[in-house]
Amino acid sequence: MRVEEIAERVARHERLDAAEAKLLWEEAPLWLLARLASEAKQRVSGDKVFYNRNYHVEPTNICRFACRFCSYRRHKGEEGAWEYSLAEIIEQVEARRGCGATEVHIVGGVHPDRDLDYYLEMIARIKAVEPTICVKAFTAVELHYMITRAGLSLSEGLKRLKAAGMESIPGGGAEIFAEEIRREICPEKCSAEEWLALHEEAHKLGIDSNATMLYGHIEGIDHRIDHLMRLRDLQDRTGGINAFIPLKFRSANNSMEAIGETSVVDDMRTLAMSRLILDNVPHIKAYWVMYGKEVAEMALQFGADDIDGTIEDSTKIYSMAGADSRPRLTIGEIEKMCAAAGYRAVERDTHYNEIKH
Image (cartoon, rainbow, N blue to C red):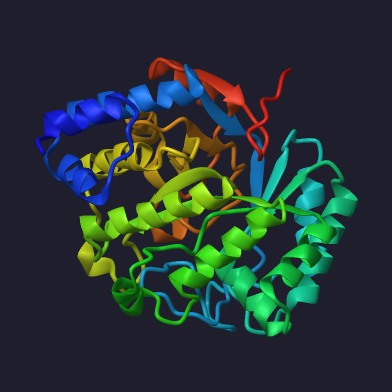
């Protein structure tokens, strides 16, 4: 089958298989991918690009795992390590009361000494301070560790977290699902099957989530397509994924630094193909903290319809890997970025309900 025939099928809203996706990914001209992805985006969200008012809490960067791509992780006692107490975390939340945020995003290292009860208390105390804020918390890797360490099933653990006030799960920790790649870059953390199973169980319990893919390191296009197909299959079963976020490997200050970073052209092809393969995931996010503001604006021409949020200089995960060292966007800047790309900025909550002012 030729690229032109596949493009015609996409325009008719027909689902891509792996072979078609690979041909389109590798051989379609960039302008064609931009057109197809933009058309697919407009079918879902019209002229809207979504954002939210949010901030991050990162309880610790001490982690029992040693992923090769990670610039964030530290040993206990190592220079640059931190582990906030619950009181310090609540201070961070209280300091941002009144900022208009509708979401607090909580991720960090998998601390070897902190258990499920610690995180349950964290969520409950945050909700006591900010009863209406949405707690989107913990990657599947963090959740799998804290729940299995407690001797609970995934369902039991997630039910307890939901009862404490956790409403949604971020998409981190997926990396690349292919086990041969995981053995090279993150052999210690939970498997692809465990990541998928945790998200599936969360969706069954009414906890929605995002999903991610770490690309631009030692994986190939076949691995990316396999990853996206597995997410599409999960979404067919549950419908619980709100947004997909392709995460670019940033190479500073980690053991894979010599690999370097993939090109902006590859970023745009990856965004466009994510939109085209994930025909059942409503939103594709261009995470501006990772890409930078200029590239994130460009991404809006390649199928992305979300740029995350204001952030309020509250995350270090990508800045420690070489991205923007003081990540913050004003609402005015977001509106300007979207308008420059020909779209309209629309504020949303975590669950993609539009917020009217």
